Length: 106
Image (cartoon, rainbow, N blue to C red; front, side, top):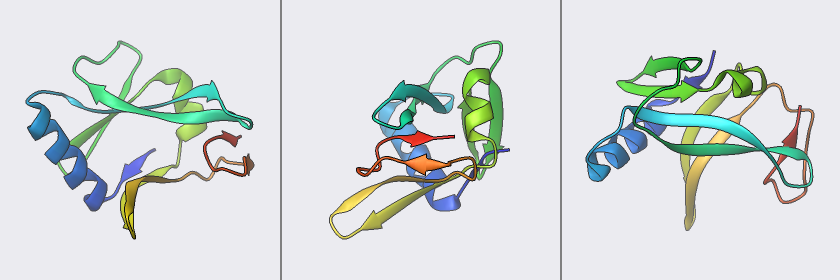
């Protein structure tokens, strides 16, 4: 199961409100970077048949079946560090990451 912190949920809800539409946050993976996989985050307006939908703190997170095996157990948070802010992932499936932190291996 994937979890989303209350802080991340509040950020997603504010973004959906500003956008004016959206079912929730689509979370997935794609082949990319020097380690193999990277996270993909986008709005979801209509889920696919094979999607898993998780609702926490009033926000839906939609995950496609292919990505679920790489993301199972992941916690999604939204953090601010100095002048930077963004989503942070605590993924127990990661076996290695590239030096820049943009991609990972499971």
